[in-house]
Length: 74
Image 1 (cartoon, rainbow, N blue to C red):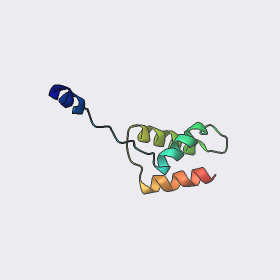
Image 2: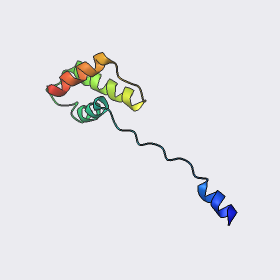
Image 3: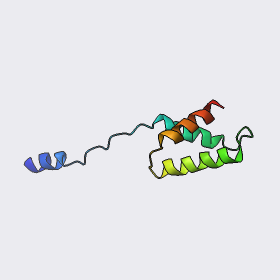
């Protein structure tokens, strides 16, 4: 009986679910619309670059977030 209790309590802790930040959400949405003609070549490249950075787990700078918001409003 005691062995069952020990085995039952030896579980790995659940990993907390991480919520996406607004910037990560916007990058994901804009990545889907990157080929829209309303974006310039530079803006398309910027969106792809941000998507790559977020995919690698990097945090975006305040300036990147600011430009991202402007692109979203476009």
